[in-house]
Amino acid sequence: MTTTPNTPAHAAHSERLRRLRLRVTPQRLFVLEALDALGGHVTAEAIMRWTARHYPAINLATIYRTLDLLVSVGLVAQTDLGGGAATFELVGDVPHHHLVCERCGTVTELDDALLAALREQVLRSYGFRAHSRHIALFGICRGCLAAEAPALLDRDTHHEHTR
Image (cartoon, rainbow, N blue to C red; front, side, top):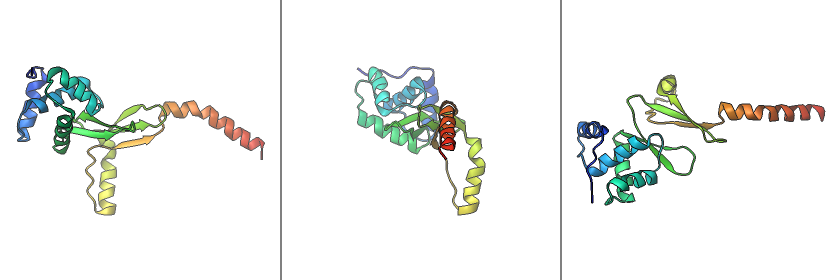
């Protein structure tokens, strides 16, 4: 049995699809609503589990095709946050990017405005207009750096005494 999506976001998602001249289908609405309901960065498999509860006729191939379409029109961002699987999230009115800690896995949102100067510099230096729809920068977060600071101090102190 299939059910029609009936959430407050239903009308908004339908309108976004229509503005992009895309057909409003149950599959597209359910994927958008799953992203809305699950929030944050979710895998296609998580979207499939959520969607299947409401629309049992859907399969993972349909989820991936739908996500590919929604990514291509800019409604959804696809990111590899280092977990081995692509994650997806709704694109809001304000673009953002991510800082991903390689130690603890913390993901921090980064305002797109911080990259404006970089985009201009890339255009000036390389004659290349960068569309930074989504960028994930990998490194070590403040918390992990603070936690390893005593170990670094100990190591540096040890090296000084052995010289």
